[in-house]
View (cartoon, helix red, strand yellow):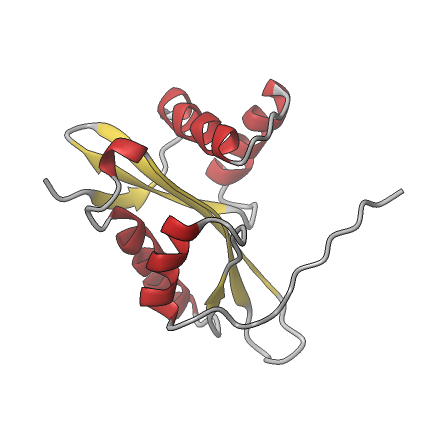
Length: 149
């Protein structure tokens, strides 16, 4: 069965949260419940730049993608950062992740943004196979992170 890709609705906190929690487990991360509620509110607030699409099959959410545009110092147009992508493990291999990324790419084009980019863990081999298929290859950049004190 093919998944339909659409915007996340304000009434879907519980279904979204199930996927979000699985995503956090995958990345061996725990966040306070308050953070998840705030993120959901941001996603469903039309004034906030964080957006989400979900994949649905037979009324069940089986995938999510979170993304946000931001200014770009190398282009006058905004660029889109695809921050989170998750597909329920039981639904992987059916093109859902690819469809979610394609939906973000299409939406970015409609908005006039210059492109879409994302990052993943170096050892996330299953996802990297999909990403190489879509983008050709990784950009070669290494990501550094520092905490703010």
